[in-house]
Image 1: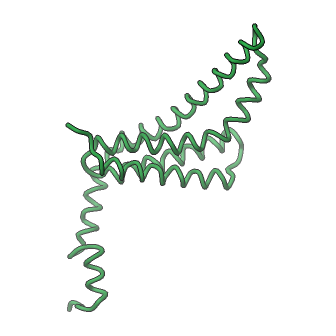
Image 2 (image 1 turned 135 degrees about the horizontal axis):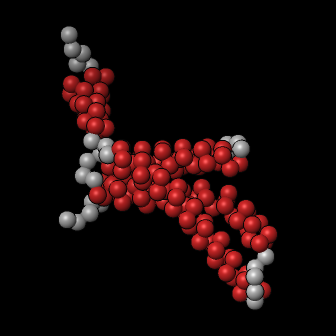
Image 3 (image 1 turned 30 degrees about the vertical axis):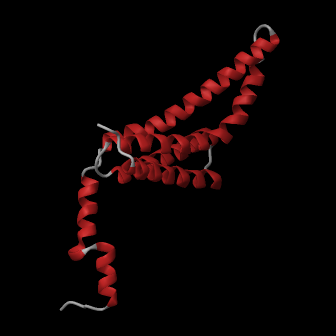
Length: 166
C-alpha cells in the first residue's frame, strides 16, 4: 500500500522514486578513488609543513642578512614556535580547498565525495599531529578540523562545477 500524501511527495522530491538517491550514493562511493583521496590528504599536511618551512627559512635568511653573519638560532626557534600553531590550521584549510578543487576538476564522478573525504582525512591527520606535537587536542583544533573537512567538501563541489577542459 502506497501513501500518496504530502509526505510521500516530499520524500520523492528529496530522494527520488524507489530510493534512487541511496542507489546513486552507493554507486558514487564505489567510484571514489581512495588512493587519490589518501595521497591528497597526506599532501595537504606535507605541503602545509613545507610552506611553514619556507617561511621559517625566509625569516632565518632575513635575520642572517641583518646580523651580517650567522643568525640567532634561538630567535629562529621562537619564531617557528610562534607562527606554526597560528598558521598551520589556516594552511590546512586553504590547501584542502585547493587540492580538493584540483581533484574535483580531474574526476568526472563523485568529486564532491572525494573532496569531503580528502577534507575529513586531512583534518584527522592534522588532529593526530596536534596530539603528537602538543600532547593534547584543543577545541580550536577540533573546530579547524571541521573547517578542513568543509573546505574539502567545498573544493570538491566547486571542482565538479568547473571541470577541466579536455
